[in-house]
Image (cartoon, rainbow, N blue to C red; front, top):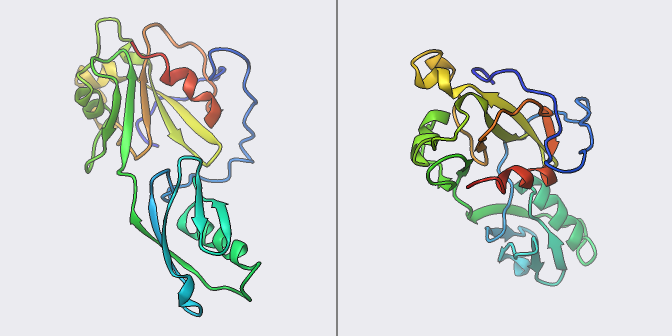
Length: 215
């Protein structure tokens, strides 16, 4: 990811030491859309159309399937969800064939938190840079550490990559070509004091420690 300063190497959680990420275990960046709570999907069974249905992902992450009970789909891609649904129906159908189509899904968004005027979740409309995201959140507060902004980006279902951005240089007109584009699901955290240590990868469960540090 061009334009990001080298990742630091300290614990990502405010309390407790998180497990160390194995770079070999983090195989690749997963850019596929993954199902979220309230998403609506259409299931089509070409050979058994009586099972065609439209289902939504419930708050607990599961979807109720006609004749096959419940299956957990939150966090899965459409291909993975089709595999899970196919396995569920294998109990009552012989070699079931099913396709999954997104009908209604969560709009792409990003989060800005920490020392900004209006921390919160923002819809991602088209190309948006990190500095533009900060501006949408009302800009930095007087206590913001411009040179230590943290970008959290999901690597896979269990881990986020964390990189430090020196937005101070960008706002001063230097290194303006290194203003990274924001992706859906990214979170920008603007700290109040110097962040001297940070692991490059953190588990998803550790992200809340940063999200709770907004004013």
